[in-house]
Length: 487
Ligand SMILES: C[S@@+](CC[C@H](N)C(=O)[O-])C[C@H]1O[C@@H](n2cnc3c(N)ncnc32)[C@H](O)[C@@H]1O
Image (cartoon, rainbow, N blue to C red):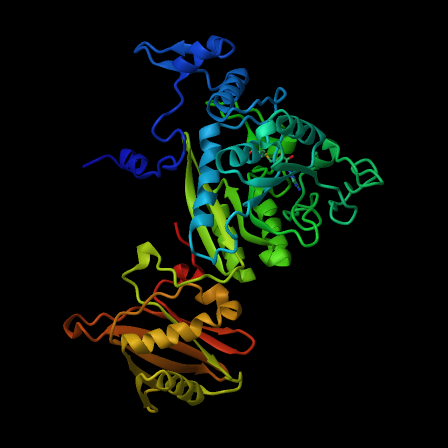
């Protein structure tokens, strides 16, 4: 039996297939022979394999420099101690966004010939995403940051590369007196009167009990009126404190306090991006961010459901020994039903009953269910003594129901954005229980008529959600699928 650890490693997603380095990892020996400045950093293992010391910042920076030069024609540099990106890893995120944009999950609005336009939140001194996105895919970018050193070096890295410089705008995030509000920090020193400059001192905030984001604006107040973007991306400051950031003994990619730390960590930072996205809605077709911790990913997905996004997608990035996640969401209504690959066996049917009043009793709910399915042509049998309705629906009836439901996406998107095609001749029972006066519990069980011998009653969960106009009843045999999360 294969050992668990090895199996887990083998199951890990590989480098993105479109990544330049997926079939040809960087050849240190070749690079050393071509670039004398890189040569001193390369040594050979006993087996003769060329290596570099990943704990040496100068070695990792020189590797990034030569990879950007050799494979991308980019002239690049960062000052000592700034966060040094690894080119193959950062390219994975770009290619994932490329996949999102080319998919038909949401309607394509980009007319032929239009440039894809992205927004890199916190581009850093290295400005890595705009540089490789512009070089590899011809995308244009607005790249924001808050620190003077990041803005100065990002600008330099752009200006030194004329083949992409037209495509990248470096945008300073102006510190607004209203939004930079950690108590005791919003003082004259942390923000100049003109809102210019954001000295790093403003980030050296004491540990606060309050885990909400209190930093400078992220999207709202940085994105200008009427601006539209195909996506935003972000490698957020992951940590809550520099101690937490610690030092990975195996690598040295640098990273200053400003780059790595924000009060509340990535959870607070990305939560703010989500809140901003609620304000900006379809100004971006896709909102995306890297997430460093799985526990935060779960929290953020729940937050996205809460705010009612139309779709959520996640992916896993391999970063050497560690794993990171990509989180993407959109407010653009999806083009089509999304069938989650890991849930194809499951039967999920979502429908909305309009016009139900809160004070309605069980019988009225059952009658509404009955007339709803009748209207779609399905046959229904209401049993007033057992408080159930048995429904038999053909594929056509299900299609009518599902098509009707798509129209309600805007209203009930957070719950019913994943509509999975029901099997033909679907039989199910809706039961209403009045447990205590004023509280109805609605349950659904789905059975396949085609296989009566192996009648499988799904432990379907029904959710009764107030959506303003009426109630949405969602039959889910796995509620976590209902949020549209997909790997
Ligand atoms: C982890 S670094 C990422 C740098 C670069 N994108 C990369 O992937 O290597 C996070 C960056 O976000 C910047 N930052 C922090 N708060 C920000 C804000 N409100 N708006 C824009 N950038 C911010 C930091 O200055 C830092 O450069």
